[in-house]
Length: 156
Image 1: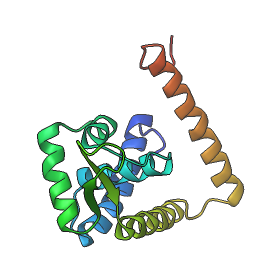
Image 2: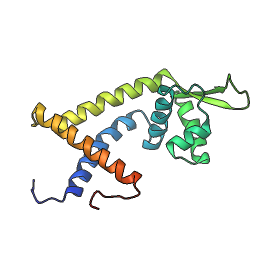
Image 3: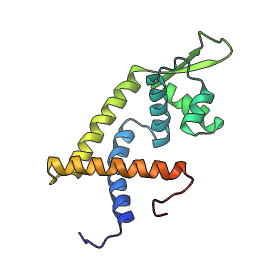
Image 4: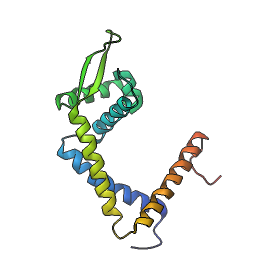
């Protein structure tokens, strides 16, 4: 591969290769990327200890409109990835809960992600993989800090 490839293109090609493989897993489960994103947002909220996750809270977390979320929840419930039920704390709204099937999907997704990463790192030593992860962790931290400052690059 050409050494003069622009850095942005390198990241883009890696992202696309990774995403293509992950999308294949979702396709097997008859899920879209957006549906999966909503489901993962729900699982994170539950992990954070939120017992009564409302549709509105999930919309905000997943950054999905009300109409779109309503349809996504309907489809995910039909596929048995989540269920809606009356809140025990406030009978005025329904809360959303992930099913065991959703937790199994998360575990399968993580396993697939690790396998894909290992495949992309084929030929790298363990130290090179650790260095790669440490480097990208720092890059992500820089990107986060730049975003917090209102900028988009670390080239100020």
